[in-house]
Length: 467
Image (tube, rainbow, N blue to C red; front, side, top):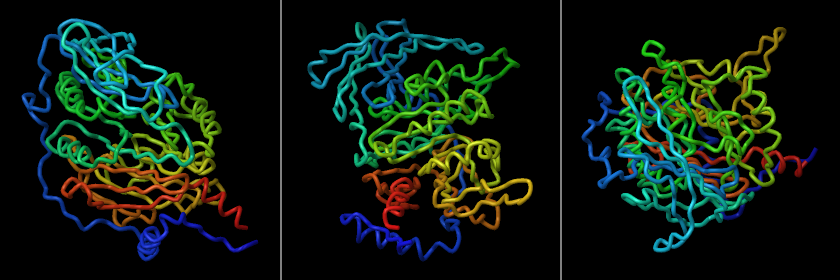
């Protein structure tokens, strides 16, 4: 057996060496950040806040947001709401801002929730888009027209750079606004991977769905211009039989469409998309995931479809974290972990992003799949084929921060901090990606936590070739 050598791409060499020296010198245990955030109550913004302002004009489209419309990035789903009347569900679009010569026709829906009736919720899929192209689009045709733009992802390929923003558990508090502003000032993000818990409307009496409307207007300033990849969290369930609401996820399903059918899913809570050199799998913590459930069978079939020669980066999104050292939602993801973790190791998932816990944490590469009734092995152990688990449910919702941590810090936990913030996952090529977490109190260029990722699939391939 030959000596294993780690070959670093030449342009990244000097910087990567410095980063790795820091990692090697600090790998003797996890770090609990010494940063102390001023203890303040998290408060939702009032309904008359400027970020909730209804756009002017008769039947003006509002709550505009987009998400990828197919698996490969040649379609986009455009969604918006009109209040006065249905109006047109047509989208005009094109590559020339002054000549929107293409059009697509969508549909609208609406729903009732207790004593609330929604506006007219439009969804329109525009197809056959060119990769890595800026498109302008207009909605509100025939009444008040509003124009926006987006850039499609580059064509799928192994060395295609692409940068994701990471946000979770956002809500609509003053801290939420700081988080979104902080993310917007970090210009690298091309799409947002959102790990669940959107509006927190269910924290209001009778799950006041007006707070779904305010949240949609709040995030429009980002979500109308770059695709947000949606994950459903517990605050999207909206199951309230006491007031006659017995259909789970009703507001979420009406408002936020995703391209689940393009990846063979039968429900919008688990699906996949490809963006650049990444294959992103979205899982549902609050839908059935046991053996032989639809989600189980879909994931069992999905992992073998991932072609790491085309999309080397394998990213998984979920809401409830599997590795969590806070005394909030502790081990809530355990049953799902027991069922699926061996697949994550087998298929060498690079990173898992979750929310739910309102704080930040990053794990080492660990797994806990060796247990059987004879050996009794039930502790996480270092595993180079396992993903890094990152909890990013720290965007600022009104429930506030999780501050109570388990002590001592578990061996699987690499870094943790009770602060609000967002993260950036910056894919450089097939082998390397740079990850940073940004607390709200810092400038956008400051990383409170960072890590170079070496792709699991290509790392294994290079090890084998060097033997």
